[in-house]
Image (cartoon, rainbow, N blue to C red; front, side, top):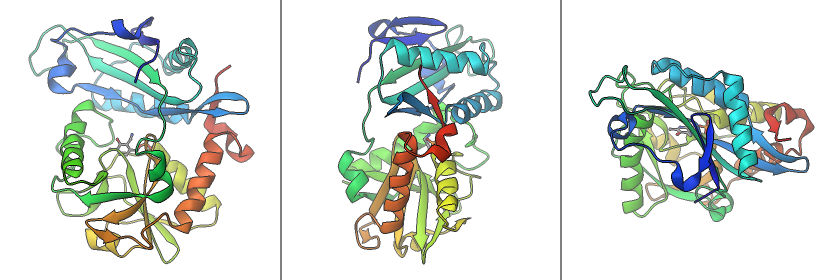
Length: 303
Ligand code: PMP
């Protein structure tokens, strides 16, 4: 993973020189917020998928975490586009980060500066190309998603991902691809970095966003599925309902639409990508790649 330039506090710097002090507050306490955005290659050049929604969520994360961003939303959007151009990125991943920098190292972040950075790099399928076609193996994590009052799931806070890292490490060491976390009550929430959908008798379900990130892919899938004539419902369920679902899939910027073929050694459906997942996945990629006029407003083209 490498590109040429990283945007840091308003300046383009060389990838290898994009460094911070070891006493950076965020490095010690996770006091940062970030976004994960994708850019796709289209017939009309590179396009950023749902940039407005990602910037809105970034600024909402900043508000929740009491950080005053020293840029307007428009300036931040422009900085993202400038970073894509500076790296001649055709398609890949965009990682804006706003973090508490170095001044002092008490737990209170209030005296530390608010620093910003934007990295971009070429990145293919997060869980592998084969995963998109064949589906992945997962397990229910023994780590519970953070209790609703432990931190904020509406905010994409760096420190929240310690919970995800524990779940991901456990999944990898158990020999599967990804974890599914329950909340403190035992209801299904999401993956370590993806929202979850399941299908039973033709109806598509997903979890309410109370204890999960308000995923932008999740929102896209709900709109796409409704437009395709599917019924979509939010529901709290236990792990057993997933075991007997016809299809299950993850949705996220990195994971895109990744089918799940196994959970806790239970085969899901036919043990491969199901037909509803395939329909939605196909539509999703066509939209992201600019092949669906109806959804062109979701794309920000790089001039
Ligand atoms: N949940 C978590 C915990 C995530 O990290 C992500 C990735 N940002 C998602 C869900 C999916 O969100 P999005 O579709 O906006 O990428």
